[in-house]
Image 1: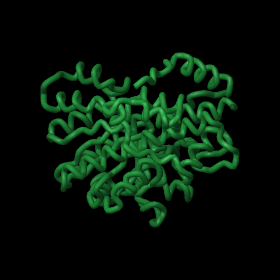
Image 2 (image 1 turned 180 degrees about the vertical axis):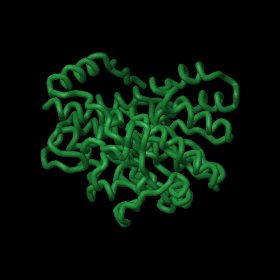
Image 3 (image 1 turned 180 degrees about the horizontal axis):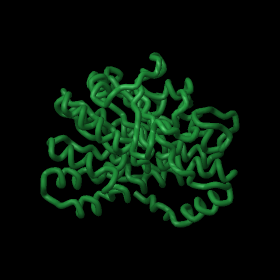
Image 4 (image 1 turned 120 degrees about the vertical axis):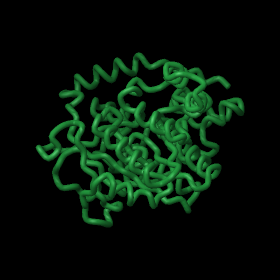
Length: 333
């Protein structure tokens, strides 16, 4: 696999693949700046809107999925602004997070209830390295408003097991461990599978399909990806069923929700009556391409991040080191 293809699949599995885009211009003067454009999935000519106006429009939805580039500071500034504005308009707006795994829900609940401190939360709930600067403001806001925080993602070790052995490994787990992943996982054909396989084989640009037959490892990788999307969707739908009248803001890597695929389509498959909106990030200031206009209810325009790697050799070396450090998951029962 070429380094570019390898880089893409590693980033997709992490939920943070970077969308290709031209460099930002002066309209977005720094990495904390952002612009919200309403597109209604391509049905509306892109129209800039304030946070207040966007929140007013989004308050009509049951689930608001905030796609993100995990390491983009402007993305997190926009998330906080939107979450605050939605909460001011919509009553109970609970926070669902890819960044916490389902088995850590009791730890999160203890933190929200004031039973443990933040250091314990971060250690026991396996918080991401960028928790303090990127997610602490949202969690603290939810805590202050007495909103729930949903640990939506399956445990990383189990996702790795699926990637190593396939979806059948779930049948070998004890019931409590099996329950940390969605009861049903859809690995069938469709646009999302095509998009994932395009990244996995390194044969397609962002959002396209590929005719190349996927390898067994790519198929297992897709099963792992689907397990994440289905588990996040199940977590959200179950929470809303148990809390009528609440809304959910869900934070996730943009690949999981872009163009209303992934987690979004799996929410709808579980409860078609739920209204789901997507805020999808893009970088650069050029006119939005048609695919970008269709990528969300709103498009969040951000300044481009610095290039991570400037050559295939540089990327291959870095990714190889990351893969070598990744422990093999223990997949017994």
